[in-house]
Length: 326
Length: 311
Ligand SMILES: Nc1ncnc2c1ncn2[C@@H]1O[C@H](COP(=O)(O)OP(=O)(O)O)[C@@H](O)[C@H]1O
Ligand SMILES: [Mg+2]
Image (tube, each protein chain N blue to C red):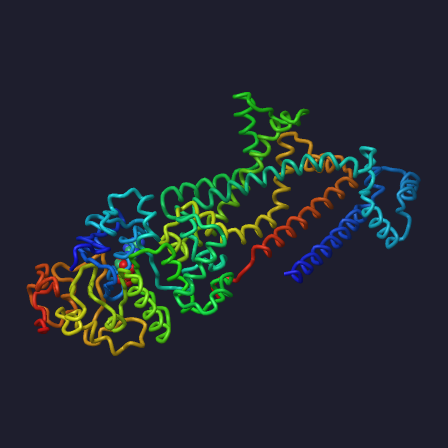
């Protein structure tokens, strides 16, 4: 890893308060993303992916808070900033694209206004300059006939086109970090591939550091540089993508990878594993995957899983699969 | 859009015609006819006949109906035998006072509702949002009569800051006399409006586009004013249009509590005096204002209604 990652998250812990009790939703998540690099954050729904992203963006929903840890954007410790200062980094240093492109845009504003709104406020563009910038951005994300479509409203675009517009919105102020939270989940397969290709092209052209969240490992196999697998709020495996895809070591990662052939289903189905992820309110002690794990031993239920391996492939497990030699 | 405006205008025109016709029949449906109600039920038949001739009431009904329309188009609303003036002269000055009171209260209520509603939508389940919700219910349920007395007691009798009623003679005097009635009238309306608008705003705050707006670094003020407000305000405008008659009813009570000589006060007096021409003229005016209010709300909405939502 080079010395200066654009994103550095260290031991992030997010907690929720409910009925007077505080309980952890995300625990001890750490990762770094360099310029031009893509980290795939993977796991079943409910494992804390979106909240990790929200914490990074400073957009945790009310009732949730960052209990400890450190988040650096381009070297700056954002948790030390006042809320208004952190807000100013959003859009300019870090952009975000979310899952549902149909609802992500304001239905009653023409798209050009939404695309350049943040840039207008940040750089004080006048109207012609702003329209020009909007056109440039829409062309960059591949909206056809962009010049004719500036004044169109979101409902006049298809889901895939709206996601392109949403990407243009996220990139309006040239952020160097992009958070993409399941940006293709709501789209059909062909559109998924197109959007993924677009994100990949943008990352390479602009040297974006991308945090790509998905529950579908197959989607990112081609593009990811690093893979981080979460289960029930914790990291279970974190590795360089090449190593990971050559041989995931955690039983849960294997199960996720085994789910790949079932690409057409909207949710991940773990092919050879029964049961559902636990609820944050009653996480089991020891390894949280133990109740569903095919390789479980007694120790898994009493002790937290130890880290195994090096920073190129680290797995938290009592009985991981052997590393594939690369 | 133009087709819609033409359609909406014709609906309003038809409503107006129906209203005028209805008020005409209302006048003629009074027991014993208008002459009896003007002269009182003990009037001699000769006096009634004379008055009927003088008022044209002995002519066939269809002819009277046409005359009624002709008079209205000339701006003649009838003659008050109690006050001995043309009703239109009588009403002019009262109408102006009522419009000032009602529009001031309406403007205040809308401004408060939008501000409070946006805040409430933003706060949602947080404690502040719940406190706002509690006070909305309290203020909405508070009768105008009770609020009025309370305000008079506090600001006129105890503090002696503001007059308890009547009207002023200078501009400043007018304003001072308006403060308490406007507050009294606006309070329950603001409570109702803000509850409704707060609900709309809250629904909007849940939408993903708000998160997108936050993710690109917009401040909460801009999100409220440029995004949430725009989407939440449309149903609200319709509500405001529909509430105009209610506003007027509240106005009648407020005017009587504060002895404020407006249309409501006049209506109340005229009803007590059995001054039927005046009562029907006021009814007509309230109806016209209601139709106009709804028309304006609809036209505003159609101007804002650029696009359909997520289909
Ligand atoms: N506002 C909230 N308050 C309390 N718990 C929440 C809230 N939002 C999400 N959670 C819980 O946090 C966990 C992680 O959610 P999330 O990060 O959205 O998962 P995903 O990996 O599917 O994106 C889930 O179990 C969810 O129930
Ligand atoms: Mg999610």
